[in-house]
Length: 315
Image: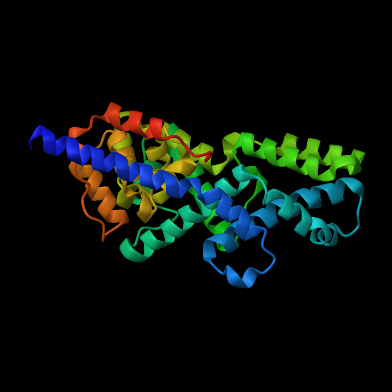
């Protein structure tokens, strides 16, 4: 292909990435608006409902812990009474919304891949192979990831999210948000409840940590996790984020049909060649056209473009 044609394709890809960034920049403000609107009948979308459910569940878990520390007889009643207000407070946190949004989109993608290709959202072919690995460490990590993925599937079906599954920095921010919500009403019981929650928290046992550890342990075979049909959605997204130097939340958003340029560059940044990258894109978006110009972009250039594009506040 002539150099001029390659340059044109590269320019089109960067312009498409910029257009995708503009869409992503509007994600959190739109979520904040939808979740703060009293009239839920106008917004029946599954994703919004799932995010709302996860925020409520986080609020109720914290309030149940507070009621227990206070000695309230009816912990469930106490959580029900104050849960709405605390959940509304969490709706104003862009980081909480971004994380819940990414989880909801991940589950939506997983269920779509199951319907289209029969990919089990819990036990993928790659995970099954790793469980049977002669390497006891790898097999143990795979079993841990399997159990965590099963918990994730169950939680998403119920529109719930365990505090224990939050990344460490987000867990800390959520508890700080609870402190701010309490304001001058912060009691000794709240302090005790927070201490108990922190003492019980172990990020290393959370699903995202277990998946990241499993992907890191693949070493030179990490490309196996970049085949969504073999790896399953959870491992695929974890590998995509790690190898392209993006946050996992942003890697999830890259699978949206309006973010094909970002997905293409992420896959190229992971080391896949143009044909392999387009094969994965077509798995996720069968109606999509192959992305031209990828063969003229190096792995380092793809990562550089993604880094220059920024994250729009998405973590």
